[in-house]
Structure formats: C-alpha cells, structure tokens
Image 1 (cartoon, each protein chain N blue to C red):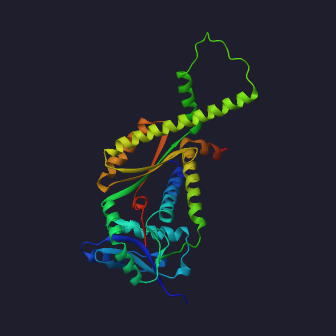
Image 2: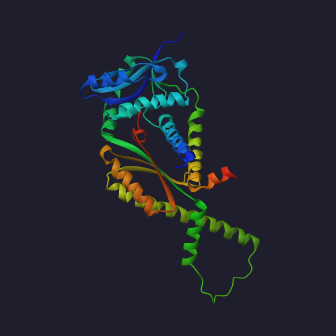
Image 3: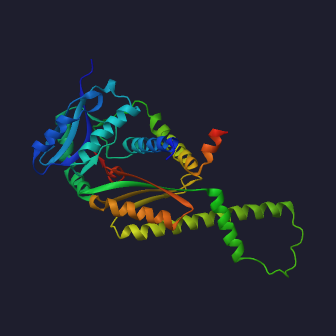
Length: 70
Length: 254
C-alpha cells in the first residue's frame, strides 16, 4: 500500500478519535464546570477529518498521487 | 494558586473485583501524567485524575491521552465515556453526582453492556455516480426516434429546466443513498446492530454512520462490510473501530 495512504489512514483514525472525544460522550452540566480552553479545536478537528478522509479517497483512486507526481 | 480539581474520564459499573481495576489504573496515566483513581457510589464508579484547570488545554495530545485512558478501560469494562473537559471540584461533588444520576447512568450502562462502536464512512466519485444516474434516468425516459423536436425555448425556460434537472439529479442521488442505507441496515439488523446514519455529509462522503453491536460480532461486521464493498463497486467503504460507545451515550448528567 502507498505510504501516503497509510499516513492518511492514521490521520483518519486520529481525527475520528478527536471528533469522538471532543464532540461525543456523556456531558456534565449543573454544578460541574466543563472547561475546554481552545474550543476552535473541536471544529478544526471535524474539518480536518473531512478533508483528510477525502484526500485519502483521492490517493486510493490515484488522483492525488498523479497530482503529486506532476 | 488554584486548587486541584478532578477530571472524569469514564463511568463504569464495578460489580466485583475492585483489585483488578486498581491494577489497571496503576498501569496507566492520565492527562499531564497524573495518577488515576476511582470514586464509587455503590457499584457506580467514576475514573478520575487530579488536574489543575489552568494546565488543561484542549490540544491533540491531551485529547489523545484522555481517549487513551478510556480506550484502556473499555478493553476490560463496559463504560460510559465522558466528553473531554468534564471537571468537578471534589470527590464529594462526584459522589453526589453519581448518587443523583444513578438510574440514568445504570440505564445507559445497560444499553452499551458488552458492546462496541464502529464508524462507517461511504465515499463515492460524485461526478461519476451522477453521470451513471443520469444515464439510467435517460434510458428510462428515452423518446421514440420519430418524435418531433421541441420548439425553441426562451433563456428563462432553459434556466428553469436546468434548475429542475439539477434538483431531479439531487433527488436521484438521495434515493440512491437511501437504497444503499436500506441495504446496509437490512444486513446489519441481522447482527442486532444499532445504526445511526448521516447522509450527504460532503460531495464525496455520501454516508457517515456509527454502529453499535455486541463485542463478539466484530468479525461478522468486518466480513459484512467487505461484502458491501463487493456489492457496491462504485463506492468506497471505510470502517474504523472498535471504539468505546461515544456516539451511543446520549445523556446529560447533572
């Protein structure tokens, strides 16, 4: 398998993980304080995930590899 | 200097053998290398570590460390993963929270008992797929060759027709995605899996799904996804997991 595809697969796993841990799971409210210092990361993570996944698809189909070689 | 507070990673039910949990917690570290320990109300147990709020930054390494603790625990226990950034001021406050939310926590723990989550993303070459759908549609509605040509139409009519065609194409694409989802659901029902679908997430990601199923059914699921890939050669199926059940603990506790 192409190294780029492997790297992109790792990216997907990390970004899927970030999406889950930052956006999902049980939420605490009431007397509990939720502290997320850099909230932008939540949105950044999702955007990165989508672009990363799409890039991997391009790599799989050979489109991106062609573009890189060119 | 601000006092230490407690970061909560997960809640689980410790029905027996607390020694095993202690052993697991000894072997892993929380955010900033902090020791992990448990706070229990009856069997309902929160896994926590001390944290200084000012040290808590929502960056990738902290989020990955947080998820790592949950992942390690999930390999041994059915649990409710907490969202990153869940902090309480003291063990007393956590005990009160566990007591107050005991029925809701138990209900959710039962829902995810011995189950794991998978992510399934389905991609397509949208232009190619649209082209195929147009060809299929045109083949169905092809006019007989002897039919007289349409009279000249105005630019406004042409604009409206183009809009209608685009709308029709979107509807065909959506109908195609629905048929794929129906096929997936039909097969995954046989694995007693619970699925949630999002459609048309991006131009190329036509399905973004999460699947909850029995831990013992991981291999049949993987085999089934391989079958889908054969059944739908124009689509790419990407399966991730197993994950702790992040997407199936839709609860807010107070």
